[in-house]
Amino acid sequence: MRLTVVANRAPISRTDEGDWAPSVGGLTTALLPVLSELGGAWVAMGEEPDLPERQEYPAEDPDFLVRRVPLSQEELDGYYYGMANSVLWPLSHYMVQHLDLRDPFVENYRRVNERFAEAVIEEHREDDVIWMQDYHLMLAPALIREAHPEAVMGHFWHIPWPAMEVFRILPGARELLRGMLGNDLIGFHVEEYAKNFIESAEVLLGADVEDGVIHWQGREVNVEAHPIGIEVERFERMSASDNVKGEAEEVRDEFGAESLVVGIDRLDYTKGVLSRLEAFEEFLEKNPEYHGKVSLFQVATPSRTEVESYQQLKREVDEAVGRINGQFAEDHWMPVHYRYRTYTQEELCAFYRAADVALITPLRDGMNVVTQEFITATTDRGVLILSELTGAAYLLPEALQVNPYDQSGLAEAIRKAIEMPPEERRERIQALKATIRELNVHQWADGFLDRLTAQRDASSGQRAPSPERNSSPERRVEEQSTGELVDGGV
Ligand code: GDG
Image (cartoon, rainbow, N blue to C red; front, side):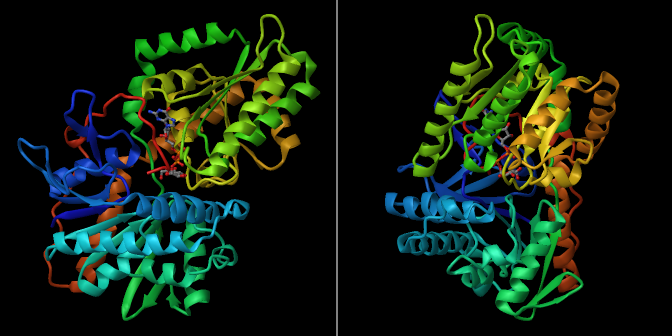
């Protein structure tokens, strides 16, 4: 069995020295080891002109093929910045006010999905398993299915699947659903998104559903929850290293606050950075005894800077930071320390470790792995304030859960977190750490592929079972430690 991964982004990028190396990011970390072991291909868009369409990797002793789908500027604008980032992204996060519906977005999304499908069809061999990723590629599965009715194909959706009544707002909702139903297995982070998807197929397409399985055009489509994890052991090691401990101390000394509240996000309107700042402002207004004692350190990583609503958000966040600091700063105390840039993972780890409180308050989020990184990196002191509108919240009841739209509730949660007694902090964080250790990114990849191959074996009945895969550290890829932007999720 070989594997074909189909994702918007390629798994390798050029280093400063001009070589090729695995890109930074959860998806690459999870899937490259499996792909290297099984062999096969990774199909992705060509992010720059002049990149080879077919590239064996590693060059000296290839494990797999990188197959690029080169895109014109018009295609990139329509498919990626348009349909993916300005339509499917806001809709899936229930933020219809950010929807930007334009015909060229749909046309280019169709065209690019066709081109991805053609590339997969060309590379496909009997017995391959195809694994699609995310909301960029909703139409490709049905096209691949037409060409290869026997193909074994799964799709992991990294963001929320909204309630059916929200999904149906989208003109073309049915076409997109039909595209997705080309798959054999569709994975989401939590059951709720899976239920929403099933209801969308049932109501909008009239699909038959029996015991959670969708019956569609003579095939079965399984829809399941497969919550993603992180590389827990690596984060634990990094956090316990002298380097990170030293950097965490430096951060605390630099900011000088008794309590440090930390937020780390891509600057995306779904992450709730603006309402978080407003809640922190309310906290300061209501609790003058904490002036001079509590600071918020907010890292906002630049993201999708070409999209107008992201430029607008940046202006609003800049303004809010200026307003809060202008009103409350004192000689030796700055209420908000704001950084609009990327950091290395090691630096992020030091920030998590320096934090007394992590403030993770997305307005919606498929999972939110920053939460998992904080839980893993923090000591017994760390308190997690977590939006109940994230996938992570379903798994982490011991967090201080908040409704991110409730500004006063959020301001109150900040006070509660700061005043939480050490024993309660320790109990909560230990429970959270235990949960996160169970969610490992390598197990996530293996678990999804196992379900996919099991389904293939069950439906064919004749093929040999897939070879045992193991999750040993040897097959994991060393990660480059650069502060490369993780854009648009995976
Ligand atoms: C999508 C879904 C789901 C951030 N700044 C820097 C940096 N990061 C890293 C974080 C974390 C990742 O980016 C962000 O992950 P999230 O899960 O928070 O969010 P999305 O990017 O929106 O991802 C999400 C995820 O897919 C996985 O399925 O959880 O719900 O939206 O790992 O650490 N990394 C580095 N420098 C930075 O400045 N190196």
